[in-house]
Image (cartoon, rainbow, N blue to C red):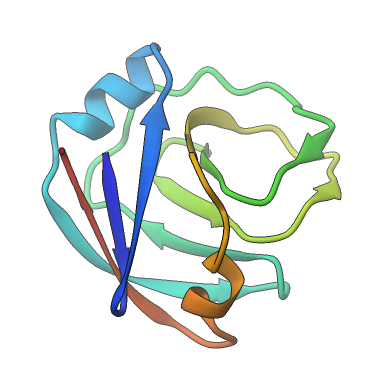
Length: 113
């Protein structure tokens, strides 16, 4: 999958699970992702995805996760968490991700390669 943030392009690998398959079926998708906590961008989808949440204990920079059943979250910092998420995928090479996402809300496009 390709993720376009501003003029930057990243590739991501989707996991083999029901949530990722359902997410993939909705692509291409362009959304405005909202800044939260200085470590993530999120967007609420109009329809829920099948969730199978668990606590990953550590969020990695570049993780693409589902919070609840409608909130897609793209993380750009590594940190410990007590929250539960369904894994959707992961950015393959996070070089430049923090700079691309910036400090505020950002337009992001998800598309299949």
